[in-house]
Image 1 (tube, rainbow, N blue to C red):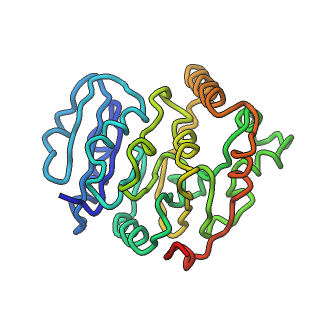
Image 2 (cartoon, helix red, strand yellow; image 1 turned 30 degrees about the vertical axis):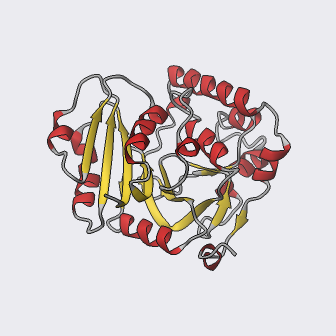
Length: 280
């Protein structure tokens, strides 16, 4: 069976009620959708297992694989089995027409292989989800409190929505892993997450991996809500986990901006919606 849309959510000690709105949304959608839950919790969650049917699949790994490895487990199950696939974070809220919007946008725009929506915080404020590929300085400056305006221009350039209109379509280097949409005919090796990352930087690495092959488009007409925890700024363990992932990222892609990465960061541009329909 080829689904219209497949989606995957990685769980870790999640309460079933937290995901109930998304489950209900899938159940109430006329599109042919399958949602895969990859549960990294130590104990199996019977509530998710009981609610498994043709629209849902629950996989219990029994160990905390991390976000990227968890998504890889889902990709191995659904690859090529839908027109479009969506990575979803477990702490998001979706509008009622979300899946219809995704299906329409991705179906009607041949040029778009990878896209991401506008992300708002739960209080309706904009979440800065579009970024350049980082340098060590970019990540260091993000730790400096907002009240300190030193290096503000550098920080603004890194977070794209601080200098570009977030109400317009954009071609960008990096999008948040909270929601990523792509056509499910991309080669599996290109869309698998690097298994070396446990948490943090896996979405940046994924974008850097896919960027040589496909443009990444920001679609402001689709809006989702995401709870941004910023745990690495509050918890010392999370801070060092973030730091460790950053070391892995820069060891892989380079500690200084090479010509390729710099060209990606300099290629941010507004895109007319009409340009996305065809390859010419």
